[in-house]
Length: 323
Ligand code: MTE
Image 1 (cartoon, protein in one colour):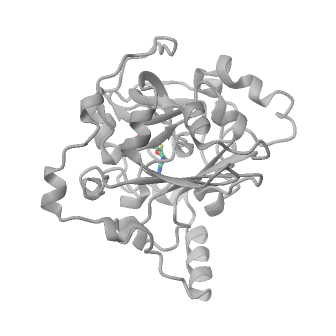
Image 2 (tube, helix red, strand yellow):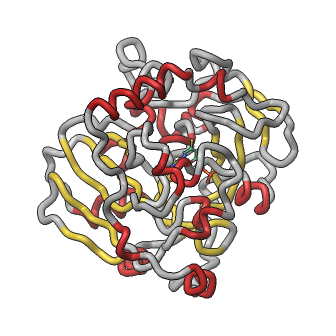
């Protein structure tokens, strides 16, 4: 991950993504003629003033009841910290993107279900959200860069979304894709393999912990945290928790994620949290808590082993589960 404005515990950009990686990608793209990156939802953009006045049409749904099955023995991170210190490369490869992200047009917004499904379809996000069983869950979030937060997400189990999509039994993975348009400044960084893509196995997607986020701190989730629909997979490093999703594709081929395509030796498909497996360029033994900067030990599966360890039984020796 690139980090430009550094705090004491952050890594310099040079220590994170080596120049050779993005330079190589840049020259590859140039050689290939670099098809225009801007595509997709460009026609949906309104004026800045209209955006500023827009009230989220799901605002009436919040707050929702907290599900006490998901307890965390940690203080909640302050709302201001969690909503002003973000990773959202579509708006820049640094943490201070929250103001720029207000330009993201979160309505109208559609979500497409395609690939190995009974019937491909595209639905309006409000129709989808209102059809789902909303609840609040307090989850830990552990970024691969070794910072962490604890926040109350609102949303619904990913299993409910999978039911809604009606995948074929032959589907093995779900591939998720973020919006892409010419307005967000990050897309000008054309050496990144846009759009942002992530993937899970069908078993992971059906696991109780996998959660589709629509809200945060008892309100609709703000743009900088991935409005109107993002993923939370708290046992995995944060980059798996893809933001502002527009497409779910069911497939029998393992998806290649944004970060895996950029640097597979550092950001793998599984990305399960494990303090004993260092990132190739830094330790994962501890993490800094957003807000207090307290450093605490990292736990295997980010402390969620009771929910997910069985997903990986028998795989540990053959697969790189923790990179
Ligand atoms: N999703 C998209 N589309 N773009 C991104 O840059 N960053 C990921 C993840 N999802 C990212 C994304 C990373 S690295 C992390 S740690 C989390 O979002 C950060 O979520 P937060 O900003 O809500 O804390």
